Length: 315
Image (cartoon, rainbow, N blue to C red; front, side, top):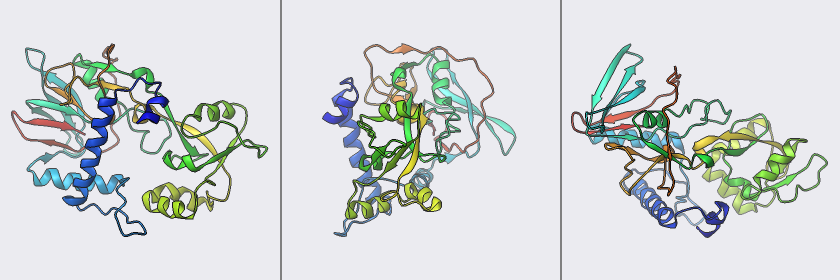
Protein backbone atom coordinates (compact mmCIF):
# COMPACT_ATOMS: atom_id res chain seq x y z
CA UNK A 1 0.00 0.00 0.00
CA UNK A 2 2.85 2.38 0.73
CA UNK A 3 4.14 2.19 -2.85
CA UNK A 4 0.67 2.84 -4.22
CA UNK A 5 0.24 5.81 -1.93
CA UNK A 6 3.42 7.33 -3.30
CA UNK A 7 2.31 6.77 -6.91
CA UNK A 8 -0.93 8.55 -6.09
CA UNK A 9 0.71 11.55 -4.52
CA UNK A 10 -0.40 10.43 -1.05
CA UNK A 11 -4.00 11.36 -1.81
CA UNK A 12 -5.36 7.87 -1.15
CA UNK A 13 -7.38 6.86 1.90
CA UNK A 14 -5.55 3.95 3.53
CA UNK A 15 -8.70 2.72 5.31
CA UNK A 16 -10.44 2.36 1.97
CA UNK A 17 -7.40 0.71 0.44
CA UNK A 18 -7.33 -1.82 3.26
CA UNK A 19 -11.05 -2.45 2.95
CA UNK A 20 -10.82 -3.07 -0.80
CA UNK A 21 -7.86 -5.44 -0.40
CA UNK A 22 -9.59 -7.36 2.40
CA UNK A 23 -12.78 -7.67 0.36
CA UNK A 24 -10.83 -8.78 -2.71
CA UNK A 25 -8.97 -11.42 -0.71
CA UNK A 26 -12.19 -12.77 0.78
CA UNK A 27 -13.94 -12.69 -2.59
CA UNK A 28 -11.18 -14.61 -4.37
CA UNK A 29 -11.23 -17.32 -1.73
CA UNK A 30 -15.03 -17.50 -1.87
CA UNK A 31 -14.89 -17.79 -5.65
CA UNK A 32 -12.49 -20.71 -5.34
CA UNK A 33 -14.50 -22.46 -2.64
CA UNK A 34 -18.12 -21.91 -3.69
CA UNK A 35 -17.72 -20.90 -7.33
CA UNK A 36 -15.15 -23.59 -8.10
CA UNK A 37 -13.24 -21.16 -10.28
CA UNK A 38 -10.45 -22.95 -12.23
CA UNK A 39 -7.47 -21.01 -10.90
CA UNK A 40 -4.14 -22.13 -12.39
CA UNK A 41 -1.70 -23.93 -10.13
CA UNK A 42 1.96 -23.24 -9.47
CA UNK A 43 4.87 -25.72 -9.41
CA UNK A 44 3.98 -26.60 -5.81
CA UNK A 45 0.44 -27.58 -6.82
CA UNK A 46 -1.20 -24.67 -5.00
CA UNK A 47 -3.68 -22.44 -6.75
CA UNK A 48 -2.48 -19.03 -7.99
CA UNK A 49 -5.37 -16.83 -6.91
CA UNK A 50 -3.97 -13.58 -8.24
CA UNK A 51 -6.06 -12.99 -11.35
CA UNK A 52 -9.29 -13.84 -13.16
CA UNK A 53 -10.39 -14.41 -16.73
CA UNK A 54 -13.34 -12.07 -17.31
CA UNK A 55 -15.63 -14.36 -19.37
CA UNK A 56 -15.20 -17.30 -17.00
CA UNK A 57 -15.80 -15.06 -13.99
CA UNK A 58 -18.94 -13.51 -15.50
CA UNK A 59 -20.31 -16.95 -16.38
CA UNK A 60 -20.05 -18.01 -12.77
CA UNK A 61 -21.57 -14.76 -11.52
CA UNK A 62 -24.52 -15.21 -13.86
CA UNK A 63 -25.12 -18.73 -12.62
CA UNK A 64 -24.96 -17.52 -9.03
CA UNK A 65 -27.53 -14.73 -9.39
CA UNK A 66 -29.88 -17.00 -11.33
CA UNK A 67 -29.69 -19.64 -8.62
CA UNK A 68 -30.51 -16.93 -6.11
CA UNK A 69 -33.76 -16.30 -7.99
CA UNK A 70 -32.78 -13.12 -9.80
CA UNK A 71 -34.22 -12.35 -13.22
CA UNK A 72 -31.65 -11.42 -15.86
CA UNK A 73 -32.66 -9.14 -18.73
CA UNK A 74 -30.26 -9.59 -21.64
CA UNK A 75 -29.90 -7.02 -24.44
CA UNK A 76 -31.98 -4.62 -22.37
CA UNK A 77 -30.02 -1.39 -21.81
CA UNK A 78 -31.24 1.07 -19.20
CA UNK A 79 -32.02 4.52 -20.58
CA UNK A 80 -32.63 6.45 -17.35
CA UNK A 81 -33.31 6.20 -13.64
CA UNK A 82 -36.46 7.58 -12.06
CA UNK A 83 -37.13 8.96 -8.60
CA UNK A 84 -40.01 9.22 -6.14
CA UNK A 85 -41.47 12.54 -4.92
CA UNK A 86 -38.78 12.79 -2.23
CA UNK A 87 -35.99 12.57 -4.81
CA UNK A 88 -34.91 9.04 -3.88
CA UNK A 89 -34.07 6.72 -6.77
CA UNK A 90 -36.87 4.17 -7.07
CA UNK A 91 -36.18 2.29 -10.28
CA UNK A 92 -35.15 2.47 -13.91
CA UNK A 93 -36.49 2.55 -17.43
CA UNK A 94 -34.97 0.81 -20.39
CA UNK A 95 -35.52 -0.87 -23.71
CA UNK A 96 -35.52 -4.55 -24.58
CA UNK A 97 -33.77 -4.57 -27.95
CA UNK A 98 -34.72 -8.05 -29.08
CA UNK A 99 -38.37 -7.70 -28.03
CA UNK A 100 -38.54 -4.15 -29.36
CA UNK A 101 -40.35 -2.83 -26.31
CA UNK A 102 -39.66 -0.58 -23.31
CA UNK A 103 -39.56 -1.83 -19.74
CA UNK A 104 -39.81 -0.23 -16.32
CA UNK A 105 -38.53 -1.63 -13.04
CA UNK A 106 -39.55 -0.32 -9.63
CA UNK A 107 -37.04 -1.04 -6.89
CA UNK A 108 -36.24 -0.05 -3.33
CA UNK A 109 -32.69 0.73 -4.45
CA UNK A 110 -30.57 0.79 -7.60
CA UNK A 111 -26.91 -0.26 -7.81
CA UNK A 112 -24.90 1.24 -10.65
CA UNK A 113 -22.07 -1.16 -11.51
CA UNK A 114 -21.76 -0.11 -15.14
CA UNK A 115 -17.97 0.03 -15.31
CA UNK A 116 -15.76 2.90 -16.36
CA UNK A 117 -15.80 5.16 -19.40
CA UNK A 118 -13.24 5.05 -22.22
CA UNK A 119 -15.48 5.40 -25.27
CA UNK A 120 -13.74 4.80 -28.64
CA UNK A 121 -10.30 4.68 -27.00
CA UNK A 122 -9.08 1.73 -29.03
CA UNK A 123 -8.28 -0.33 -25.93
CA UNK A 124 -9.69 -3.85 -25.78
CA UNK A 125 -13.16 -3.81 -24.24
CA UNK A 126 -13.17 -0.02 -23.84
CA UNK A 127 -14.56 1.18 -27.17
CA UNK A 128 -18.14 0.57 -26.02
CA UNK A 129 -17.70 1.87 -22.45
CA UNK A 130 -19.84 4.97 -22.93
CA UNK A 131 -20.02 5.99 -19.27
CA UNK A 132 -23.79 5.70 -19.05
CA UNK A 133 -23.65 4.95 -15.31
CA UNK A 134 -22.07 8.34 -14.59
CA UNK A 135 -24.71 10.00 -16.77
CA UNK A 136 -27.57 8.23 -14.97
CA UNK A 137 -26.14 9.29 -11.61
CA UNK A 138 -25.62 12.88 -12.71
CA UNK A 139 -29.16 13.15 -14.03
CA UNK A 140 -30.62 12.37 -10.61
CA UNK A 141 -28.23 14.77 -8.86
CA UNK A 142 -25.46 12.48 -7.62
CA UNK A 143 -21.97 13.86 -7.09
CA UNK A 144 -18.84 12.72 -8.89
CA UNK A 145 -15.40 12.61 -7.32
CA UNK A 146 -11.80 12.36 -8.49
CA UNK A 147 -12.61 13.08 -12.12
CA UNK A 148 -9.33 14.95 -12.48
CA UNK A 149 -7.62 11.56 -12.09
CA UNK A 150 -9.72 9.78 -14.68
CA UNK A 151 -7.54 10.03 -17.79
CA UNK A 152 -5.38 6.94 -17.43
CA UNK A 153 -3.40 5.43 -20.32
CA UNK A 154 -2.33 1.82 -20.66
CA UNK A 155 0.64 0.31 -22.50
CA UNK A 156 -0.07 -1.89 -25.52
CA UNK A 157 1.97 -3.36 -28.37
CA UNK A 158 1.74 -0.94 -31.30
CA UNK A 159 -1.25 -1.62 -33.54
CA UNK A 160 -3.01 -3.80 -30.98
CA UNK A 161 -5.60 -3.23 -28.25
CA UNK A 162 -4.50 -5.31 -25.22
CA UNK A 163 -3.57 -2.96 -22.36
CA UNK A 164 -2.86 -5.40 -19.55
CA UNK A 165 0.04 -3.56 -17.97
CA UNK A 166 1.03 -5.63 -14.94
CA UNK A 167 3.65 -7.64 -16.82
CA UNK A 168 5.40 -4.51 -18.08
CA UNK A 169 6.96 -4.28 -14.63
CA UNK A 170 9.37 -6.88 -16.08
CA UNK A 171 10.14 -4.68 -19.09
CA UNK A 172 13.00 -2.56 -20.30
CA UNK A 173 12.03 0.25 -22.66
CA UNK A 174 14.22 1.38 -25.55
CA UNK A 175 14.51 4.30 -27.93
CA UNK A 176 14.47 3.84 -31.69
CA UNK A 177 18.28 3.74 -31.78
CA UNK A 178 18.33 0.80 -29.36
CA UNK A 179 19.49 2.73 -26.29
CA UNK A 180 17.63 2.34 -23.02
CA UNK A 181 14.92 4.95 -22.40
CA UNK A 182 16.03 6.05 -18.96
CA UNK A 183 13.29 6.39 -16.36
CA UNK A 184 10.67 4.66 -18.49
CA UNK A 185 8.56 2.16 -16.54
CA UNK A 186 5.04 0.83 -16.27
CA UNK A 187 4.76 2.28 -12.76
CA UNK A 188 6.13 5.74 -12.13
CA UNK A 189 7.65 6.18 -15.58
CA UNK A 190 4.77 6.06 -18.04
CA UNK A 191 4.90 9.83 -18.64
CA UNK A 192 8.47 9.41 -19.93
CA UNK A 193 7.18 6.89 -22.46
CA UNK A 194 4.43 9.33 -23.47
CA UNK A 195 6.87 12.17 -24.04
CA UNK A 196 9.19 9.97 -26.09
CA UNK A 197 6.31 8.76 -28.26
CA UNK A 198 5.71 12.34 -29.38
CA UNK A 199 8.93 12.28 -31.42
CA UNK A 200 9.93 8.65 -31.94
CA UNK A 201 8.94 5.05 -31.57
CA UNK A 202 9.42 3.35 -28.21
CA UNK A 203 10.30 -0.33 -27.97
CA UNK A 204 9.99 -2.81 -25.16
CA UNK A 205 11.22 -6.23 -24.11
CA UNK A 206 10.16 -8.23 -21.04
CA UNK A 207 13.78 -9.14 -20.39
CA UNK A 208 13.68 -8.86 -16.60
CA UNK A 209 11.52 -11.97 -16.15
CA UNK A 210 13.36 -15.17 -15.30
CA UNK A 211 12.27 -18.61 -16.49
CA UNK A 212 9.98 -19.26 -13.52
CA UNK A 213 8.33 -15.86 -13.89
CA UNK A 214 7.75 -16.42 -17.61
CA UNK A 215 5.95 -19.69 -16.96
CA UNK A 216 3.85 -18.16 -14.19
CA UNK A 217 2.94 -15.17 -16.38
CA UNK A 218 1.62 -17.36 -19.17
CA UNK A 219 -0.51 -19.31 -16.70
CA UNK A 220 -1.85 -16.19 -15.01
CA UNK A 221 -2.75 -14.14 -18.12
CA UNK A 222 -2.73 -16.29 -21.28
CA UNK A 223 -4.66 -13.66 -23.26
CA UNK A 224 -1.83 -11.17 -22.69
CA UNK A 225 0.39 -13.39 -24.82
CA UNK A 226 -2.20 -14.15 -27.50
CA UNK A 227 -1.30 -11.00 -29.45
CA UNK A 228 2.41 -11.82 -29.37
CA UNK A 229 1.82 -15.42 -30.42
CA UNK A 230 -0.25 -14.26 -33.40
CA UNK A 231 2.43 -11.76 -34.40
CA UNK A 232 5.18 -14.35 -34.02
CA UNK A 233 6.97 -12.28 -31.35
CA UNK A 234 8.67 -13.64 -28.26
CA UNK A 235 8.23 -10.65 -25.89
CA UNK A 236 10.89 -12.00 -23.53
CA UNK A 237 13.68 -12.01 -26.11
CA UNK A 238 12.54 -9.71 -28.94
CA UNK A 239 11.92 -5.98 -28.88
CA UNK A 240 8.49 -4.75 -29.98
CA UNK A 241 7.05 -1.26 -30.49
CA UNK A 242 4.56 -0.02 -27.90
CA UNK A 243 1.93 2.69 -27.73
CA UNK A 244 -0.38 4.19 -25.09
CA UNK A 245 -4.17 3.82 -25.22
CA UNK A 246 -6.70 5.76 -23.14
CA UNK A 247 -8.48 3.76 -20.45
CA UNK A 248 -10.35 6.66 -18.84
CA UNK A 249 -12.12 5.72 -15.61
CA UNK A 250 -11.70 2.02 -16.41
CA UNK A 251 -8.17 2.31 -15.04
CA UNK A 252 -8.44 5.80 -13.59
CA UNK A 253 -9.99 6.55 -10.23
CA UNK A 254 -12.76 9.04 -10.96
CA UNK A 255 -16.42 8.14 -10.77
CA UNK A 256 -19.65 8.32 -8.81
CA UNK A 257 -18.88 9.47 -5.29
CA UNK A 258 -19.45 6.87 -2.58
CA UNK A 259 -20.35 8.24 0.84
CA UNK A 260 -20.28 5.16 3.05
CA UNK A 261 -19.10 1.57 3.46
CA UNK A 262 -22.42 0.37 2.06
CA UNK A 263 -21.52 2.01 -1.27
CA UNK A 264 -24.30 4.59 -0.95
CA UNK A 265 -24.04 7.76 -3.01
CA UNK A 266 -25.15 11.33 -2.32
CA UNK A 267 -28.66 10.47 -3.58
CA UNK A 268 -31.00 8.30 -1.49
CA UNK A 269 -31.71 4.91 -3.01
CA UNK A 270 -28.70 5.02 -5.32
CA UNK A 271 -25.59 2.90 -4.78
CA UNK A 272 -22.52 2.33 -6.92
CA UNK A 273 -19.69 -0.19 -7.14
CA UNK A 274 -16.71 -1.15 -9.27
CA UNK A 275 -15.14 1.12 -11.89
CA UNK A 276 -18.26 3.31 -11.96
CA UNK A 277 -17.60 4.39 -8.37
CA UNK A 278 -14.89 6.15 -6.44
CA UNK A 279 -14.26 6.55 -2.72
CA UNK A 280 -15.24 9.43 -0.46
CA UNK A 281 -13.53 12.74 -1.20
CA UNK A 282 -13.31 15.85 0.96
CA UNK A 283 -14.22 18.13 -1.94
CA UNK A 284 -16.53 16.39 -4.41
CA UNK A 285 -17.46 18.08 -7.64
CA UNK A 286 -21.22 18.43 -8.25
CA UNK A 287 -22.13 16.68 -11.45
CA UNK A 288 -24.00 18.57 -14.13
CA UNK A 289 -26.28 16.34 -16.17
CA UNK A 290 -24.69 16.12 -19.64
CA UNK A 291 -26.74 16.88 -22.69
CA UNK A 292 -28.84 13.78 -23.33
CA UNK A 293 -28.02 12.33 -26.68
CA UNK A 294 -28.31 9.03 -28.42
CA UNK A 295 -25.80 6.65 -26.91
CA UNK A 296 -25.11 3.38 -28.71
CA UNK A 297 -25.52 0.27 -26.55
CA UNK A 298 -23.42 -2.31 -28.32
CA UNK A 299 -22.77 -4.73 -25.51
CA UNK A 300 -24.82 -6.96 -23.25
CA UNK A 301 -25.66 -5.57 -19.83
CA UNK A 302 -26.97 -8.37 -17.62
CA UNK A 303 -29.16 -7.13 -14.78
CA UNK A 304 -30.90 -8.77 -11.91
CA UNK A 305 -34.12 -7.76 -10.28
CA UNK A 306 -35.89 -8.99 -7.18
CA UNK A 307 -39.12 -7.30 -8.12
CA UNK A 308 -41.14 -4.54 -6.51
CA UNK A 309 -39.33 -3.25 -3.46
CA UNK A 310 -36.19 -5.18 -4.33
CA UNK A 311 -32.84 -4.02 -5.68
CA UNK A 312 -32.01 -3.37 -9.29
CA UNK A 313 -28.41 -4.08 -10.25
CA UNK A 314 -27.24 -2.42 -13.44
CA UNK A 315 -24.07 -4.18 -14.55
